[in-house]
Image 1 (cartoon, rainbow, N blue to C red):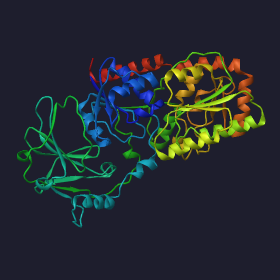
Image 2 (tube, helix red, strand yellow):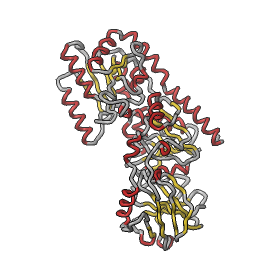
Image 3 (cartoon, rainbow, N blue to C red):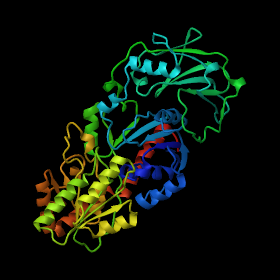
Image 4 (cartoon, one colour):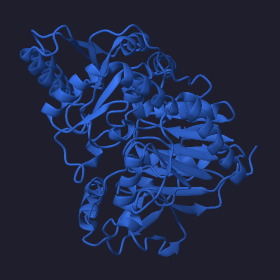
Length: 497
């Protein structure tokens, strides 16, 4: 069985990437797994980095590089037996024999609306792109004059196919178009809709032709495609006129949910499952992410927080943690303690400015930073830290912006495995991991974070034992067992050994 796995954020090395990476690793032990790469990332260096930083081994997988455009991913998923979309807020649809989506959090409806164009706006942009000034809703394309359009000849593994024209629509338009008609030589032709592509046959010839409206980055292809090339002049269709008529624009609603049509939807927590149901009226199956288990070392007076340094969205709010720690230091209640903040960094200007602000505000206090540290260094910090602070979601409205909260909290579990006492913000999926006063504490206000921290220090021995026991439920072994059970279900459905 050939399986395609898509995650476009590998190089952020976050919890979602470990969630997807472990899935691909387990699947590759029994089947051929292809990993989609976008951008300029080197596959060998990425594989090594994932091993070093996330303990994910993708050496048994193969890479396929595609343009950074999800419409391509939807089209090429049809060449596989199974497709797993593991990309956060992705809109890529699957067209393999079995299609599954691994959700860190569902795409909020308002964000789905954001990229949906009205019919008038769509036609305006398309006419401008193609230099067509017709006043009605008709687009005409003549291939003989389309020197700027990319055409590729694709031979499948059997050497048999038909000639097709594939027209790429503006993202968000295809799912809102009803009663689409394609007319060739004034006659309506049958067509297929795959993602944002309209596909129509143009003749019985034994090649397929892709026609898109903008040239993507160079891409590489894997089997079953064995050869890619540009059409020669003599192979081009001499004359073809296509009219795309979209009679009426329909707004997005639950019937056009990005989560309809999937064979399986996997969510990472009860919180995410509940949000998916509330937003889109769709249920899911919970697959808890795999957490690494770390050994406990001799504990020191260290408060640890792990998370990427970025502004906005579901930021880890290191600024709040620094403010609270400084206040506690000034009050003299945690003398001899250190606050250690570690995580990955982002190159974008706004995130770098946020990082510089954090470092500047910590000056003069026992606050340390660790950027893009190795797994070995992280393991040592987990082992010696006594308390874990978490603040993602602080200052946000869970009803209006649930995506800005912790969706699960894989790092919290990893800290607990090493006997670090969690004190997490009371929101999102993180609060599901902590039993108040049993294996940690939750907080809602900054003053409450201070009080809960002092309680954790006083009850450290009891809380530490309970935290380690609770973390074992989310270990790699449990995750791998669940994935193999899921794989067995897919194999039986596809009747593939």
